[in-house]
Length: 73
Length: 295
Image (cartoon, rainbow over all chains, first blue to last red; front, side, top):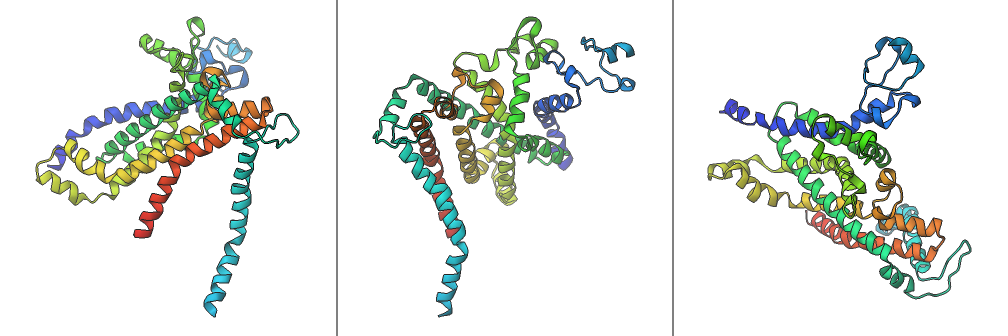
């Protein structure tokens, strides 16, 4: 009985996760922007991860030609 | 004898707060009323009697009409949106799913963020630029192939203020969810079980048992959200700056008082805001005091 009820309610995760995305999007932007340098903050690249220190460079789409990122890539 | 002494001591102990509240709340309200009835314009105080002309001029002012319309749209979208979303989230979280705590904290978290920060982030998210300058949510929509969802957000004529309400919903719906969740948890399980035995389905249980029992929560949420939306100022300024299509009374008050130096008119807008909030709040406070006295 209880397991059947549980199974019937699993679909609720779909709206919950969708709503979680809605709540997380602005927080993601806040957090990611907080880790960026002033030169890196640009509306065009607001969804990209911060470049950070050269050893953990992750972003490949950033088009800003900063000297540090140039030397790495 | 000792009773009189107790009484005296009680009054003595609460007198500092009574005096402070009287001076800093009621005396200043009274002063604002007096200023709103004066011709005060410019930096020098001027208490020349002007009757209710400031109010009459405001109600004839086209800009104030825009303010009232914007406030009504904002309040409608924000209050209804937050309450619907909050209620749905609370009902979903009340089903005893795994990870409930995680979702609960996640939905409640935006409340911990200041309106200014929310405003700045949503200003980026709702950037209305098109073409190669597309950014924010519009860029995200384009990238995942939902181009049709991209829109002008708060720069939409007439309904732009609803986009600001979206940011406010993001911030406050978690709080409404917490209110409703607490209300749902307070309802005894027997009521639900009895309805189930009587053959009611989930929808009927929520419609005819949960919702009526939650009406005090609904009232509280309505009042809290309603008075916040009447006073909205910082969120709009942070997202869009002070621009006329998104004007609300609080922004008009700021501009007419501190940029235009029409102190009399500014005070009049302040009093109108105070009265509109009071109309909403006072019946609620009376209701709460009454129910508290009964229980």
